[in-house]
Every structure is written in C-alpha cells, then in structure tokens.
Length: 382
Image (cartoon, rainbow, N blue to C red; front, side, top):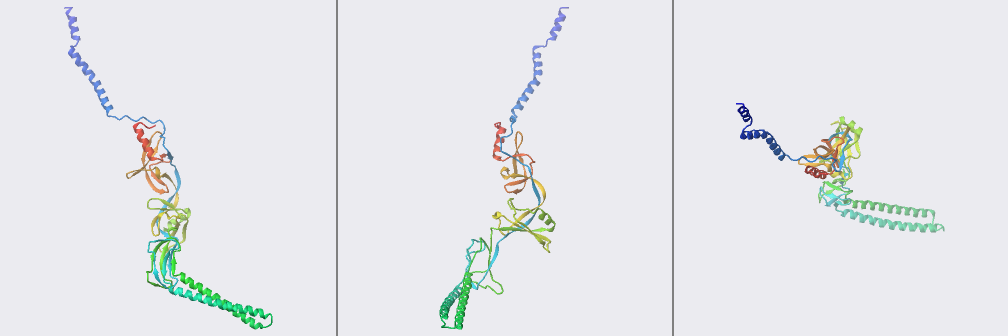
C-alpha cells in the first residue's frame, strides 16, 4: 500500500504527452499573433525620410515689412498733353487727305493738301511787283547819286537834290512793301499744305476731299484733329472729403488692368471745386513711355491717404498651381510650399496680404526648391 500510493500521485502529476503539446500551443499563440501583426504593419508603412540636419542649400530672400501708404482709389481718364484741332488759314478746296482717323503720323507728314492755283498766281504777281519796284528804286538811286555829284559843282539847286532824294526814298519804300506783300502771299501758299506739328494719331476729320474751306470770318474752319501719344496725363475727379489727404501726401499711382502700377510724375490739384459736383480735379503726369496707355482709356488711380506697412515679394518667387498662388518658404531644416493671398503689384514685386510673416525666408528660385523637396522625400537631399 505504501509503495503504490506515491507512484499513483506521481503518475497523476505528469500530464499526458498529447495534452502537454496543446498547453504549449495555447501559450505561444498570443506572442506569434503579435509578431504577425507587427510584420503586416511594417509592410504597409512607408519609411520616413531621414531628418535633415542642415538648412536647405537654396537661394533665399528674407521678407520684411516696408513702410508704405494707405490709399484710396478713383477712376480717371487718360488724356493727351499735346492735342490740337488744325484749322484752315486760307480759302481753298481740299484735294488730298492722306490719313484717316486712327492713323499714326510722324512730325512733318502731310495731313491736308489744298488747291493752290490762286495762291501761286498771287505769288507770281507779287514777284513781278518786286521786280518793278526794284527797277524803280535802282533808277531813282542812280539819279540821286548823279545829282549829288554835280550838286557840289553848283550845276543843280538844293531843291532839285532834295526832290531826287525823296524820289529815291519813295522807290525804296515801294520795294520794301512789295517784298512784304510777297512774303504774305508766300505764307498763304504754305497754308495750302498742312503738316503734322508732332508725332501722334489722327483722332477726327472734319472735312472730305472736294470740300471748299474758309479761313473766316467768323472763325477758321476746323479740318483735322491730332493727338500725341508721347506725353500723357490722367484726369481724376476727387470728392472734397479726400482732397486734404491728397494734398498732404502728394503721391499717387496708376493701377493698370494687369495689376501693374505706374508711379505718377507731377501731381496737380486744382485750387477750386466744381460747383455742380463739389469735387476737385486732380491731374497726374505719366512717364514718357505712357505704360501702354492711350487717350480716352479709363484707369484706376490710387492716392496715398495714410501711413502703413506691407510685405513685398518678387514675382519671380511665386508658384502658380492652378488657381492657387504660393511660394516656397524655407525653415530651419525643410522647405514648405505655402499658399499666399496677393494684393497689388508694384513694378516687379507684389504685395503679400496673407501667408507670410515678417522675417521669413522665401526661395528665390522656385524650380530649384521644388527639386530639392522631391529629393528630400526620396532621401537624396544633401
């Protein structure tokens, strides 16, 4: 009895070999499942790029707030500084109109040509009068010299000498009158060909070929209108509430349709207001090239009205992605394409309203920044 009891207990303490395998499988199953899940998660995850340790080697520009002006804008009309209506200065008939409305002309080009039969006849008559007066004066002067020579010998009296002198002076006056008449007739002949006084465009024609024109009375007949495109200005009607600020800051810019701005030259504020609209007229001189404007166009004119600050960014640093505009902003270790909200253009720079802060660095070469960003994501960036 004593030998069989312990052996039975030992026999019951050891599990069956088949049961021992099942127990081990149950204990290893959670660990293996965790390893499988970890492997699957590792297969579906993209390895993160190595973190950069140095600033991106890109050309950059640090943007800062620049002093500027608050502004108010009104519509203005482009005008020509040199604009004229050429009128008739002789009585004649139009025989040639080489240029039509809208044609560009150079200084000295023929605008109107008239018939000149009467003017040429008058010139020939004036030349004949000059020849006759010259002959009379030559004869009177020769006679006077002869009388003066023999007067010293006592052969003629003082009264005879004075008469010859008076005849010579009258012949000289007649010659001068004939010459003056010839100059007037020659001027009338010059009026039969009207030429452009400066480079410009023809804006209106008042007559046609074959019409007879009069130099007056009551007034000279208008013939053709000409405007120069070289010197332009803008006229603006400004309300009286804004005229004090305009006189104080005395600065304005013309805003073009494409957003570009042209700084106005001389700014003139008229010293009186329109009694009907109670507004003041302001006139701005444009640069010599005119910025592509022509008389009659409507433009926006922005007048300085207060102090402000703005961020300006070169247009070459901008990136266009569909309807979105942005720039590559450089951080300490990376590059970010950031969307911007832009304002007005100022020459080759544009105002940034939102998206940038004072002191941030922007890549000046967007293409190089894009290449560096792609290389960084691939792990090839320096």
